[in-house]
Length: 153
Image 1 (cartoon, one colour):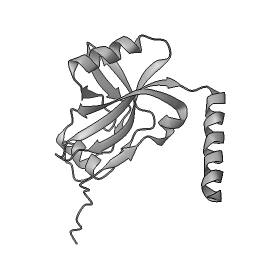
Image 2 (cartoon, one colour):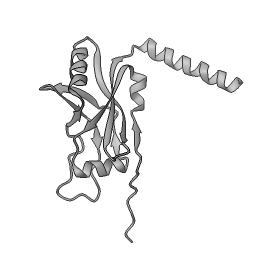
Image 3 (spheres, helix red, strand yellow):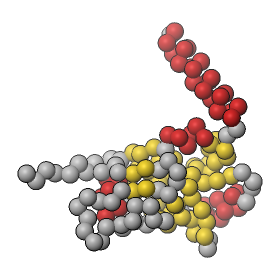
Image 4 (spheres, one colour):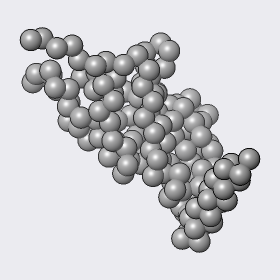
C-alpha cells in the first residue's frame, strides 16, 4: 500500500523555450536558497521554468516565476509554488551581471536546473538578448540543414 516516491539522485531540467527565444551571451551557475519541501519536489522533477526570469533587488539576485510544485507529502510547512527565491553567486559575478544588465535589451534567464554531486540544487542562468523573428527563422533553417547533412552521411 505504501508506494515509495520516485526521488532521483540526478535531476536535469532544461528550459527548452529559452534557447529559441534568446541568444545566450554568458552563463553562470548559481546556488538557490530553498525550503525543505522545495528540494524534495525538485528531486522528483516537479519544476516548470518556462516563464522564469531573474532580477536584482538591493544588490542581490532573485528568480521569479520558477514554479516548483508543492511536495505531495508536505503538511502545513509546504512552500508556495511560485515564490521569489534568492540566488547565490560570488560578489564579483553579481557586480558584473548588474553592470551588464544596464545595457538595453539584456535579461537574465534560467536555462537549466540540476542537483549537484553534493546534493545541492543549482540553477544555470544566462545573460541573454532576445532574438528577432528573422534570427529564429535562421536557427530553424540551420537545424534543418544540419539534420539533412547527418542523414546523408
